[in-house]
Image (cartoon, rainbow, N blue to C red; front, side, top):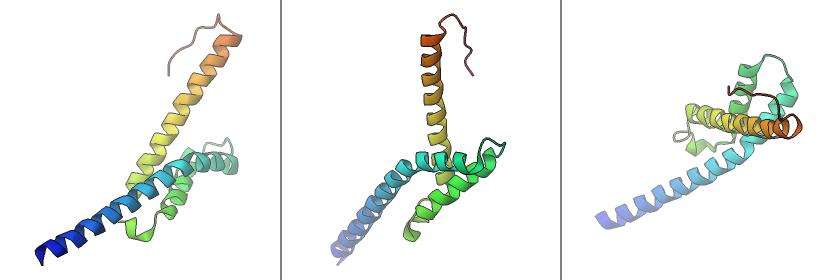
Length: 111
């Protein structure tokens, strides 16, 4: 009896873990697109916080209801922020490469 219950509990937990992984992967692939959409919707105004909240809301709405206990709003906010940080760092690297190839004599500072 105990082993049967342990088997079903293990299967249930493995199913939850798989659902979490698939959802997390899907969210990561959508965040960059949503950040670009937020830029298009809100433009270049000083509305960074509004854009952030908009993206987080859209991402959190993609989380299936049973996983809301495991994927919290704070986790989504962290995921969105880290994705934005990586995108920003990549953009700076590409900009510096472009500037180095077109204007090699300009001295750059790191932010």
